[in-house]
Length: 82
Image 1 (cartoon, one colour):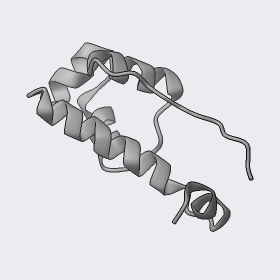
Image 2 (image 1 turned 135 degrees about the vertical axis):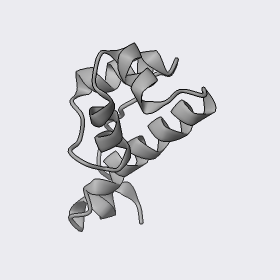
Image 3 (image 1 turned 180 degrees about the horizontal axis):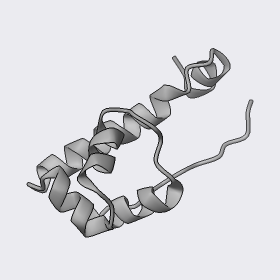
């Protein structure tokens, strides 16, 4: 299902689930525990765990700090609807 179709259908969780999966994959690839990642980005282990299991969506500033700690770029795009 395309992103627009998911949003129109009310399936907004897919966006954050995708981010959560990528954070967990990158953290594991770097050999970091949730606690170590939390320390690197100034948050708590429970906040990282909540993000990775798809709990409450993180704030953008938290995502920016996580991206920095994981040596990644945070890319958010807005595209006109067709």
